[in-house]
Length: 421
Image (spheres, rainbow, N blue to C red):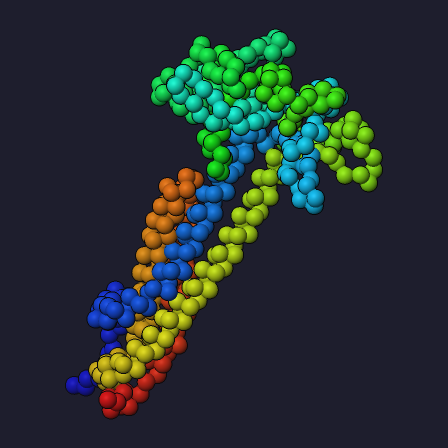
């Protein structure tokens, strides 16, 4: 009877390869941890910066949209001292009459409102606070998309008769009347004169460092006559005019009409500079979105460089590992391990390092982004795409970084390897 002798080599399963790789990495925990560090920093940077960028962008968009994306804001010109601009609104170039003309002659202007603003001291019995006082017309709530949550806003008759009434923001209400009180019907004093509180505005939150609820609203006529006292020669001067169009698509037409009408009213001829500035809220959103997007791309690119450095670190450590484990490789080959098995194990070790580092990096990035959102009060947003990209990058880094060391290990001659000391 003849027996055929076949050389049978057992093929290792993926689980066995991964188990051997994990065991080899666990025996060198410090080296493995240091190798992962570059990947962890790179992935956590990608996740954290992407999340923070999206959160900040969303926060600013919400704040601007709360003011209305179909709103133009027109500011008075800037006074100059020498060659230094004092900022928009520092000189009186806009009047209430300009706002009335826009409402009458600009077809795309659906709502028009003018206002004056000053920082003054407001007093109620033993309490006082320094706050912003706005002198507005009756159209302000509709133009600004903000209305009283308690009580009411003043009407056109109260505006025309310079009635001494006031609507307070929630921050002012809490400071003057305490938590839970609304103060409606109470008398507050503004620059020594009494104003009856007739409403409390709905809360709007903060815009950057500005608390939009720390405000008081009174009729523009009484504001101009009693608090500001600087009427223009042609009417009541104002700091700004709000122009609301029927839709965001109508904004460009409204801006064109308003600009030309004001130039005509202010006797500004071609080649002369405007003595006012028109700001388009939609343009602000678009510009900010572009800036944040470019900043995010820049930082993600830097994080990508960190990942590249991490990959180089993995490759270096794996090359050192091949040298240190030359005898082990020789013994395994002498016992029948194929070049393919050696190649797979070293590749597996490199991929395990990068994937575990990627998991830790993703977790760290999410925690950093969450902490930043709590600290700086913007929405916490983590894009699934950034998480997928993080894992994908970590896998690719491990795969590429392990190729050369794994090939070197697979090509070792077993006799030479066994003789090495």
